[in-house]
Length: 437
Image 1 (tube, rainbow, N blue to C red):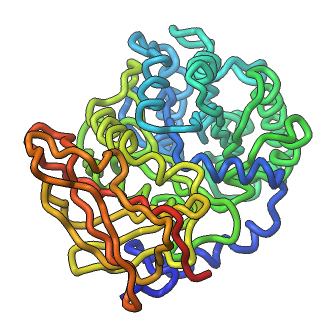
Image 2: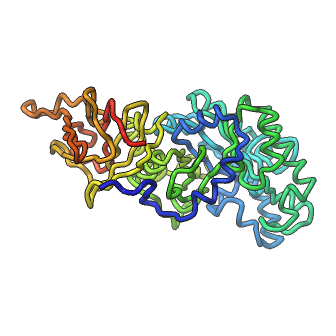
């Protein structure tokens, strides 16, 4: 039977309510916010000079000794030279993996700027690399028609240290609203970012956004402010849809920045299931990578993005430019769930759980979706006309409707792996469908 509206595999009580009020007060242009919601999937990139250490990005400065801070600020820049950095390779992989926007860490909490700036010597141009990495990333991703977003931290440990304050994320002086020099410093940097790199589609403020988001809209009314003006749950998916555009951001492993050892990664199927749940609830998924200090992406991360690429190459229609249905998910069996997205009167039933064997006809019953005389059903990615090497088999999808529900019969016929096994979710397209509102 149908699961109650809003039921989830990721139960996070209270998350939706936490973001409701801020969502209602959004200052983003409504049309641009709707455009952002249609994107579905973005690439988050956490990269800074401390990738050389394989440590948590920036936070190791909090509570650090004077010697540690001195070496972090003065020595680390001297060895940062990503000799294998190829932003076009990143952008091509992102395009293949289905990313429709990128969010790059222009400045994390450390205060180190990955862009050319006149506000601070603690920036990429003062390293052996010397070139403006942000400019190179923007140009590469634009060539691949991927929307451009910047992460920016209003915290700035370099400036706090320069002012003689303890490096921290707590206390009055950390907040730009109570530190005029910090606010002016941030406004100058945000102005550089929004005027030196062409139109910027997204700004992600990881900290106090008041003053900075208003400046963003003054300089660029079409820029969408995500964190700081909309819900951006981190490492979790809300239990119910939120009342406005939202974005969940996740690491591939346990750390945002590069972690060379002691790391464990989510599987490809976990990432795909996260994307499915997020889209069924109307949100965007911002999936993070942490480049190595030499500029390469770790192979564990590229492997997972390539698994996602194949799934989206088959099923992208169910992910992009879609909206959620009133019923997010139906429990089909103990082994399978159906998550829903829709586009017009077309419904996509995304079947998660135990893998569907190839060449076996499966019958499922949906009780919240109904067919019409014009309805057709088929698995995305396949024609329903051919089962390779089995000309006697008809793999075409079919359906019947009765008072109990919509009974769908489909066969997975497409060969995606050489051993015929495909462990990832399948998607059933149901055209000209109706459902309860």
